[in-house]
Length: 348
Image (cartoon, rainbow, N blue to C red; front, side):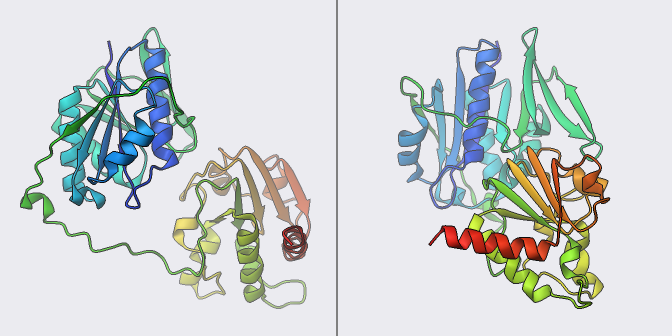
């Protein structure tokens, strides 16, 4: 019988992310498939996080919740996070450990697996059970080949991709909470977290939970029909659209690299916005690409977008070759001007 635990962390603002709830939902679903009567949740947080645990996690159906609390756990640091995860896993003695594919957990999971003589697989996109054996799916070779595998080594650590699995919802009963003491010695505090450094941007452009992904290509910074570059207008139109729709912004590699080439740029576009073979692979329900041609490397990043549309002046561009559900042959500047006007009027 496989014992399963889901490891999550409480955010610095004392909240739970959707990604964490998705990992818990997958853990509960896997326990049902394996007909495992007991499954657990491991929580890393600060002392006041116990209130959030009692309010939001005890009703999700877990057999027990192991909680490691310390003021130093408010900061994403490898040494303290790994120590907390190791102590929780030793207390729960799991066969399978599931964690969300966040920067915090992805950084420590391989190391914790090594400490516990286990093995780890990352970026899991699906888990199925055949003959009472769990099988995972993940993409390899730049997300062009989907691999399905299983392992005999236990404990087996898995990090699961966001926006794929259903978030956990309230269940019957209440889970008992066990506090786990984690010795936080000075040796674990050699790395000092002094803050966060983010790319310069005048607005929030990355919204993982947004329903729409808006992708801008290098065409926004090229010469237009009048022979002039309208980068400032492009910036105004795109930012206004993002604000009105609360959509997330993506960019092609070409538009992201413009700053290093001395060409006109969209100043709010950074490498964090890059979508494609060498960038992110988002999972928004809908996507709208503008001023990009739908090249294969870029489309690879769109494979998990459910509904794909594009705006391009070229009716023979890559989007027209079956890579978009709908292609609008039009000037993206004109389209966004009209869209912004209609959206603005509808909010009055």
